[in-house]
Structure formats: structure tokens, C-alpha cells
Image (cartoon, rainbow, N blue to C red; front, side, top):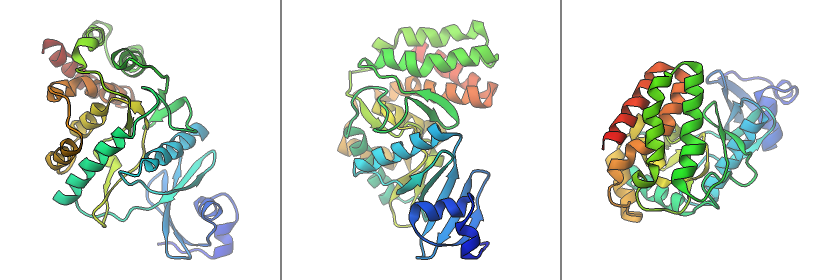
Length: 295
């Protein structure tokens, strides 16, 4: 830990100064964690994280998303102390190891989070922008009341078009994803009400707390289909996933055939990753689309 004198930290516009401004506490030290994260110790013993955001809308979207998720009173999230046009200040999560009981509890809490609902598919959190983000990729929160149509038009196809424009997906390959989108009304399963989604629920955004409770970070929160969050957990791997699903299904049973729809819900994050990280993810998205179309 790099400890700096209080006056030097309180002035200026560095992470310590931002933390002091939003917490109202003196700063006793700073420790860079990555290119965008700094751990800041406060004089009352607490530790917060100062995160550099990619612009004011990104900071606003993340803060609004965390508060919306917290408002459900289910899955825990780090408390938001404040944000400005470039930084977000939240509590640090003291991390532990994934355990069976914590996984079952997480599943139950996630089911209750989804059940807290949203005004519409694509609805942003209160105070959140329409022009939001999933990771560093732009994500528009345009609302709709028909999930298959909304999911195709505002989640899958925008990233497919960008991947084609970038040359990551060849034009001749795009048809298989477009055909899946055309068939979504029959592939989507029974109609469900809009759920309150985390929206970017890969394993890196699931922190197993030292106190036995999971915390969710870095949301791309919006109203969506609850199976999308679950498909994201499966896509990138989640410790104790069977136990998570056990707790989830005890609390809110999933509609029949949900296992066959996992690929439908994975198309969105795979195409986002294709846009961000290239051809490898494009090939995975195309393989999933072919499997869904064949089924």
C-alpha cells in the first residue's frame, strides 16, 4: 500500500481526491489495481474502489445499474458512493472462495432479483442513459413489449451488423444468425414478463465475498429475459453453477425446455465479444446459431 499524506491526497483530481469527495473521509493510502481501478483506504478503516469510466454516460449507467439492482433487496452489490464524468466510487468487496451454500443462496437471490421486474424489455435503470454499455461496447436501451422482436432488433442484429462491417463476420455467414432472429417467436419459449437483469453476468462480475454472500459488479442492467443472465453464467463458466441453478429453480422454476434455449440467449454476448475481440468469438457465435437453427 502506498501511503500518502492527507493534504496531498485531498487536493487535485486523482483517485484519492475523488474518493475523499464522495465519501467525506480523509484518505490514508492508494494502491493501483489495474489500468482503470484504484484501491483507496479511508481514515475510518474502510476501503473503496475508484474506477475510471469510459466517459460520463458509462459512469452514470454503471452507477444507476448498481443502485437499481440494490433496490431489489436481493443479490448484494457494492454500495455506490458517487460518480462524476470520469470516475465511479464503490465499496471494495473482500473476496472469499465459492462455496455450496453461497452458490445456492446466490441462485435464490438472483431469482428474486429477476422477479423484481422492469417496466419493459430494454428499460434502463432509473436515472440511467439510453446510450449505455455492455463492458466497453455500446448498448442502446430501447424499450419494447415483445421479447423476440426486441431481442433481435436491439441486441443481436446491431452487433451482427457491426461485426459484418468490421469484417469479423463474413457477409455470407451472417444469414444463419438472421434466420435465427426470424424464428425467435417460435424459439423463445413461453412469454415471460421483463426481468430485472444484471445484463453482463459473466464469472468476472460475480464476486464471492469473504462473508459467504455473492456481490455483483459492473452491470449492464436493463429489462430483459431472465434466461439471458443464466445463459451468460453458463457461457463463460461459473463456479458451483449446478448449485446456483438449484437455488434459482427452487425459488422460481424455469419454463420447460429452457436448456434448449441457452444458445438463443448466448448469441448476444458472443456477438458483443466478436465485435470487441475478433474472429474467435465470431466463430463461436456462428456455431451456436447453426446449432440453434438445426434444433
